[in-house]
Image (cartoon, rainbow, N blue to C red; front, side, top):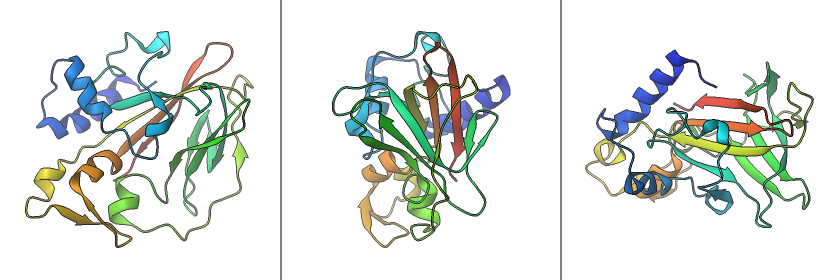
Length: 214
């Protein structure tokens, strides 16, 4: 889990979306931010049944984060993880020479869900740099420090950009790939922080990805 200093930094960053103020947690506020789950993840996210170890965590419950538990179309909640990148101290990180990608395969059905692909997902991929043609490094199965390979997964993120303020003079914004989208699309998909947490069969919860995207 994030250390106290980094928690404070990330909370402050994401709070900027609300004018620098952290609002009291209400059902309406939670629902507002759940609407900002990226489009590519919405079919695979449920906002319930979180790991008990996280329920009382003030960082996890900060409502400026969209978040959810991963579920397959067959209602499976256990996955094997694969990634294109490097594994350092139980965390997945990108390589300098190739984009990062992380996938979850349902344990029983084998259906694959893209959790994050640096070439296509997030603020930098949409608005800053076109990495679509960059090749991925060879895929690796994730094995955690307890030698476990099957996990329950929570994914969360946020945006520190107020797109209504950033693009006051236009309703449509041109992406780095040339496509035009509205600001509601950016609010969901141009996130600039993403984190992935897992729980293994031994009940251990680990943060395996923390990444800022701008």
